Length: 187
Ligand SMILES: [Ca+2]
Ligand SMILES: [Ca+2]
Figure 1 (cartoon, helix red, strand yellow):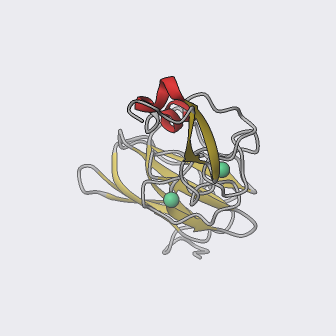
Figure 2: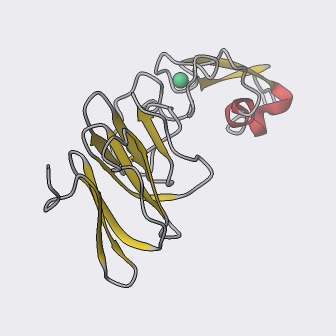
């Protein structure tokens, strides 16, 4: 019989079937995509066991959720902690991570100014220094030897050792502060 369409159709959606009324048959391929935009926080679209409510920061990618293993420097925040790590440094009882977006987060030591874009980081035993995109250095943590007293200036690169810090200025001059080699009681 001509023109006799079934009253409903079914399309696959999120592991099940979705009933499509006859009047919407022409749209049946678009309906699942339309519904993705209307999902609730309790939904788990990518089936990784984590919902947006649980902290899944990309519910269309099952490789991304708070339980995922982070892969460094790939432009993706796999574990949803707000950071894609570029460099990890470790001192005594503290560690810091420099993210690809220029943020620094430390554990066991305070983190530096979140408003600045950091490009380099180095840790000594109990202190850490970082260089920002303007070439300014900040050091924090233990300062018993002055290792956190970064001289003001514009720097090209920095490094940190047990109880001293070093840097090369934008003009190519090497500097050391703290318990430097050559001092009466060097590291
Ligand atoms: Ca999910
Ligand atoms: Ca990553």
